[in-house]
Length: 217
Image (cartoon, rainbow, N blue to C red; front, side, top):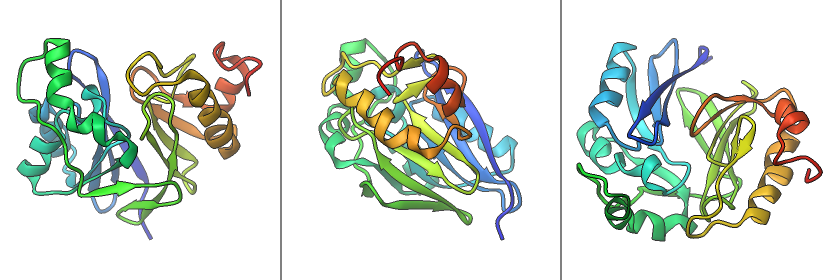
């Protein structure tokens, strides 16, 4: 039986993106979700918790979530898993995104070892996560849901008191709201979540108080 699922958030890059280390507290085996940059900081955080990283999981292909993936994968000799293949153009254009935002440092286009689709599962040390395809913020955005722990990593689909922006290439507000309504909210009000920026929360609280969802779900 696996131990408790734990999460360490490592804010990275000027975007203060929540790179997340998910790990089992018995085996000390984990994955990195969305290494957007500052790879040295991510590795140091894993080492400080004695966690061995076995894979990288990507929720989507925006630069603040994926720019450090290739460097981290090569450094630790681990695979990159996700997102959905609809984000291939974003991952192929990370170097262009870096120039657009005026970012320095090593930014490389990403080639995942495995694309994900609705209904797939991923696993770390006995903790199984269901994959939900939730477009709107990005065409290939996925959410990772652990049913046993009643926990989801929702990336930039939903935030505490807000929702993902839809003014970037491939974004669509109605599609985003449909993903939240049809994919996230049926998981249950008790489900806690970590998101891509800022504090996490619970789905029920967002259902009741999120102004972007009022009258839409």
